Structures are given as C-alpha cells and as structure tokens.
Length: 307
Image (cartoon, rainbow, N blue to C red; front, side, top):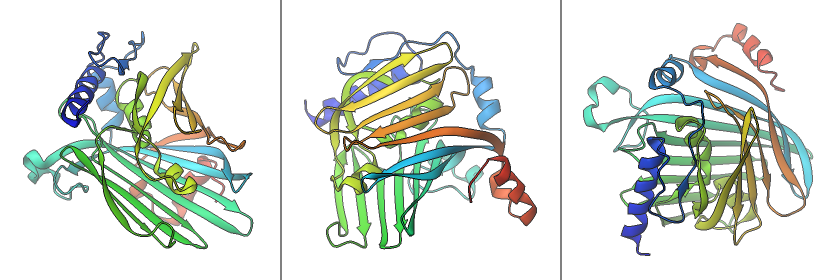
C-alpha cells in the first residue's frame, strides 16, 4: 500500500471515529469499535472540558526498570487549549489567531520513580485536536526524561504527510538525530483519543508508532509497527489491549465506561518478566495554573501525592 493510500485510509478511519459511526471501515485493518449505550452529548463534553479547569489524576505506580519493580507515582493532566496549527505551540492571543487556531486536548503525563539512590522524572505531552474530522492527526508530541546520569528529549511534529522526529540525548549511543516517520496512530495519543471519542479506540490490526518512553528505555528506534488492539468490557469498565506483532511489548488501558471516560489504570509489559502498572488514586478538577501559593499545597494532599 503506497503512502498516499495509507494516509487516505487513516483519515477515513478518524472521520468514522469522530462521528461515532457503527458502519464498517473500508480499510480492512481498521475496524471502529461499536457505539456504547451511553454516549456523551456535545453539551456534556463542552461543559466538562471547556469549564476553565483541568482534570488532574494521581496514580500509584509500579515501574519496571533495570530488572526490578520501583515504587512511584504518575499524574495525568488533561486540559483543552487553543493551539497554533502552524507554530504548534499554545496560542497567547487565541482570539486574534483566526484559522491558525485549533482546539486541542493536551495530556501531560508526569511519571516519577526512584532507582536505588537516584530518581527518574519523565514528562510526556501529547497535543490532539478535538475536531478529528478536520484535523485527524495528533499535531505534536514530546517526551523528556531526566535522571542523575543525564537527560534525553524527543519531539514529534506533524508536517503534512509525515512526522518530523527530533531526538536529543546526553548519551553517545543515542546521540542527536532527526528523521521522518509516516503519519499513523501514536501509542502516546491513545489516551487523548479515548477521552475525545467517547471511550472508543479502533479494533483490529493497524500501524502504531510505539511509545517514546518505551523507545528510550529499550533503545528501539521510533518507528511504526504492526499492532493489534482488542477490548473486553464489564458493566463499568472497558479494557483495551494493545499487542505488537514483532515486539514483545503489550499494553492494557482500563477506561471508565461512561462519561467522562476516565483512565482508571494501565499496564505495560515489555516481555522482561516485569510489568509496569499504574492505578488511579484520586481525580480533581482545578485550574492548576492559578494554584501557586503555599496554601495551595493542600491540593497535593487531596490528590494523595507522595511528594
């Protein structure tokens, strides 16, 4: 399949995905999930996500690293923002941006854990347009990893029919690189897609660019790889299972079955016998960018954060 046809198929899938269609996709590899009985209305979505607050979630973390499980915590910050389509940064003057303005769901994942004497701090940020029909691809993704030996930074920017991938590293084996990847679904955007699209993900075999954190930790180059997404459901949850066909990596994501489709837990299995696991502790909705005073540290205790 040539690149133009691949891109056309993916855009078709996103259009079906955004419209909550129960029709079958013409692309045999991308079969949209059927609608749930409970689907959020546009007003319900807007009232929640455009309320002037962010959704802040804290998770207990069991992180696999260097052959052992480490205790830590994860924070997921979901918030909508006005974004520049051309510059791919948050707009300072959204009212004056005109057609350059696009509303995105931003997800900041802050992951912290300790390995022996030293600690890791990871921030992964994804910018996914709310209007998937008009803007079917995530516009930007970046990941920074800091630990006592050094730091790395990875960024993907959407450039027409490809992602520009820039990687910078303290370590010689990684070096500073720049490359391009064909546009397809990102593992790092699955959670924003779930929140935007009524808890839905595609099912079946598809191309998936695997996680930037996985790429750095395992020293696998960023690339699109074949994966299968399947699901199981209970009365209250949906579990998505992602299995890569040519890599040992498996991921599962547990999702609240009704609006606002919170991420309840997830696991990552890289085939090393150690499984990374995150489980939700607390959710609050706050304009966190305004909570800067010492007295606002009470909100950290409310979120049951360790540090």
